[in-house]
Image (cartoon, rainbow, N blue to C red; front, side):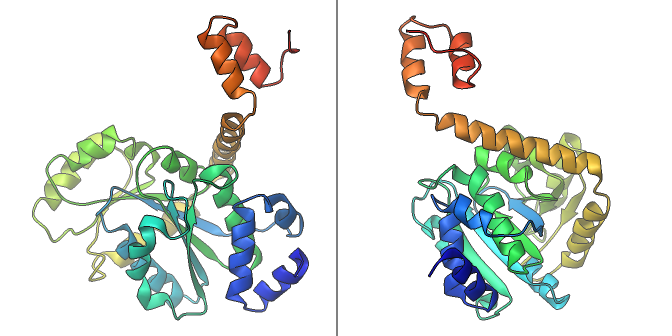
Amino acid sequence: MNILETVAAARAGSLRAVGRLLSQVEGAGRDQVLAALEPATARVIGVTGPPGAGKSTTIGALVGAYRERGLRVAVLAVDPSSPYSGGALLGDRIRMASHTNDPDVLIRSLAARGHLGGLAAAVPAAVRVLANLAYDLVLVETVGVGQSEIEIAAVADPTIVVLTPGAGDAVQAAKAGLLEVADLLVVNKADRDGADQTVRDLHLEVDAPILTLVASKGEGLAALVEAIDAHHRADTLARRTARAHAQILSLAQTRLREHPDLGRLADEVANGRRDPYAAAELLLGGLPEKA
């Protein structure tokens, strides 16, 4: 089955064809697939936070809320460390099991490691595929550690950071860099002791809206959906340009990290045979190679 036939099968409702397209855009077939697709956009909501914060429960609740509106929803659960689709997030997918039999909900694990270009390149391509298949909304979940959050923030609007009540949680999140990417902050499991203190601590750290939620019971869900909608309504050309700027830089940095000359240039700098400024220019193609 060629690309056009696979796209046609996916549009006709074949989940196997959808999976094949997503697998191809994670790897060497990306350019070929994207060339066969029309430009299309879908709303992207990023959800991140430390392990155990209840991200998957929150996403499951959001999926239910958006399905009530009649929207087709896709979930990309990103594991930046596992080389296998599924990986550590398989248990999280089980927590979304109430939606697995809904033909208008797609849940897909995306393992960034081992795929061409990593997370920065795989997610925008997957979103474009899903938009072409008439998904209205894409929820992207990451594990809340490292570069993946910066890359998601370049694509998502908004990026939601989910935390739980606890001594020092806000401070730890700040140290991890999570608060820097947050458009909305959610204190989940807000029926636990310490929730009010966590909200107060967060107010000292950020200016972003802070909401409380008990995702497992749906408490606070309506307010979260309204906050997401309000953020989306407030989007501007300047903000979209800033996201595009960040996305281009993220993709470019990924390409540079994979440059075949990077290792050799690093050895030359380490051995004193070349200074790092000249090496950087060479990596960017700004200087002719010298023997």
